[in-house]
Image 1 (cartoon, helix red, strand yellow):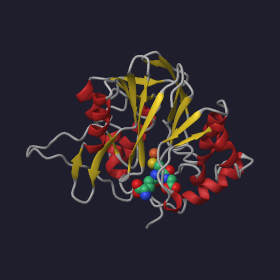
Image 2: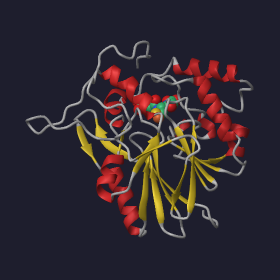
Image 3: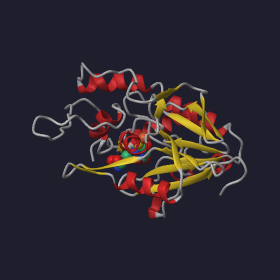
Image 4: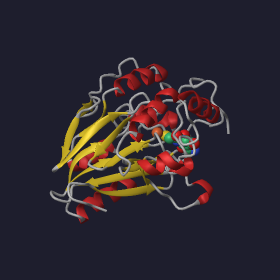
Length: 295
Ligand SMILES: N[C@@H](CCC(=O)N[C@@H](CS)C(=O)NCC(=O)O)C(=O)O
Ligand SMILES: [Fe+2]
């Protein structure tokens, strides 16, 4: 779908992490932004791969697009970001919300990384709330939408909004808000900001967990979410939503890659430097995320 001055949006579903990665295209200039690219990792073997990111690069090449931005909506807790890899391959600048520094500070303490620079210098640009930027002739705007994480942002590009882990598809409700620095109350307020966009705004979500085993889906509208989001349309007040969200969060085990992913993602998607033997190693705190449900 594309109309004058509006982006063409292509979603790429990663079945292993139920993530949706986006290529957001200005049809006039063929400039594009890549949103939330996945760098593949298999925790059982420790293997990494670039299948998802290379699929995005193939798409960009086949369509003759030029990558203007590599964007993350938040530091992901369930997969590695491919931002660093894609920057190396395309030269495009990377960006994320400026409150990522608070997330860095939080996880720097959890991982005990005294020398880690928690200053956001790992990205080319840190967006403040309300910042605008261009994708070719398209104007993009940054809306802070904390709750799932402290640093979460929504990118509004023309009539499209990349709402990541705030609301999922209407039949699967909302994202969890129980990671370090998360807040169900903030999530509720961020969702209200998204629902204040025009009813016909196309909303693109960050994950689809395929309730009932249906086919993956990732596009809805503000009107659809208002009408039928299972967590939002059923709650009249912030307090009702917080009770629902926190109740559900108490039942959810941590994402299986949270401790793998955050140490890479607070570093802008950079893998740890190889040690003297040429191999890279991850670091895991024990008993750092107390109170989480077990499988
Ligand atoms: N089972 C998945 C869960 C991932 C997860 O917790 N995803 C977050 C978004 S990063 C979420 O909001 N999940 C909502 C839910 O599982 O209901 C995993 O282990 O990776
Ligand atoms: Fe997330």
